[in-house]
Image 1 (cartoon, rainbow, N blue to C red):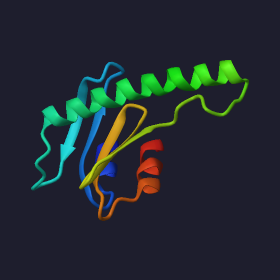
Image 2: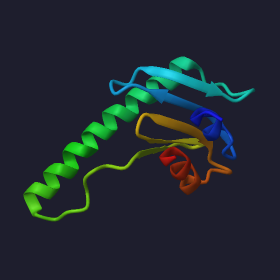
Image 3: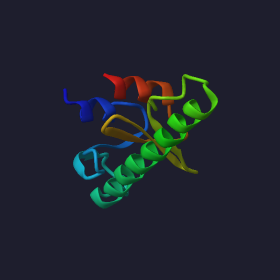
Image 4: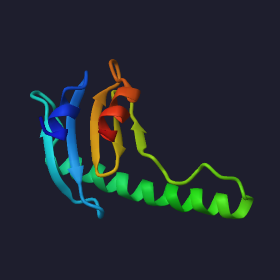
Length: 112
């Protein structure tokens, strides 16, 4: 089973996607009946890359200016919406319906 198929097996998964270091969509699966498109997943991939870059800058800056540790490296990103949320780690992400989303399960699947 591919990593995208594993992500799609999560309860409430509407889509799973892979992306490059610059946010280009490199692979995806969309659940039947979902309104998500490759274009919307490409946008999410770019959002992930941008937010991970910003969070990394902030974590490194905080650690160097305060001497406190444990903020870097950034382990992932979650974008929470009204009806669905998306979780990403590395170069993969999954979109989940909020009514059944299990964020811990999503992060565990993304780590494998």
